[in-house]
Amino acid sequence: MVLKKSTISLNTRSRLPAWLKTSLPSGEKFFDLRSLVRKYQLHTVCESASCPNIGECWGNGTLTLMILGDHCSRACRFCDVPSGQMLPPDDNEPRHVAEMLSHLNLNYVVVTSVDRDDLPDAGASHWAETLRQIRELCPDLGVEALVPDFKAEVSLIETVCLAQPDVYAHNIETVESLQKRVRPQCRYDWSLKALSVAARQFGMITKSSMMLGHGETRQEVVQTMTDLREAGCRVLSLGQYLQPSRSHLEVREYVHPDVFSEYKLIGEHMGFDHVESGPLVRSSFQADQQAGAAGII
Image (cartoon, rainbow, N blue to C red):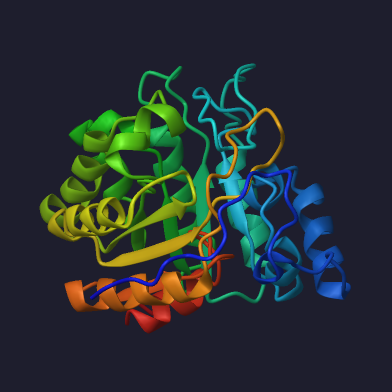
């Protein structure tokens, strides 16, 4: 398949194309959900990562909870989550997460975390306890665990897998040639191995995500998709990178929606159970619908 040429290549000082504009958050559900997050003193990636879909998702009563604090041990150059100032994990957080979810009428939730390379187990035991608490209080809730790479340590991946999330997700983020530029403390092979171990050794349904617009070529995108399939990844999301601030990496290209549509067709031809591909798509955007389309829930 020959991909169409994307139509806009701009730096971040240029006006955003029309397909990237979103509405300001509003509505009763949005404010009710924000109140619950504040009540239980929890963090969400929706807020911490300045997600452009927060208004739509929270307005529909869906969110992505972020555990293990709101500061990351890594400093990826695309990410708006601050780094440094690591605090000890909150032992009450797993129960608080489960209690909050028990008050929401959800059939699916995404839980993610910052990287915690400062901890002996990189936060794997905290992850497992959070999943166990959710299972106890919300037995019918579908749970997607969007986890760090754990430096591809099999014992840490096993700890999370044994807590039985419905989906084991980890984002490879970008193509191999741009890993050092985009996320210098991560490794392409760590991400692929982590997904492969979860899928092949522990039988997990695995999912990954990429951001486009960093300067990757189409051939590199397709190669990364191929590598993910070979690692056993079954669900893939592709979205447009947007620069959170001037201190972050600049956008090299605004990828046209038609190109995202063609990547979706390529991914489906490769055998992914589901490919969610579009400018405003994020890993956890409409994750319940992604899981449903893949036959997971």
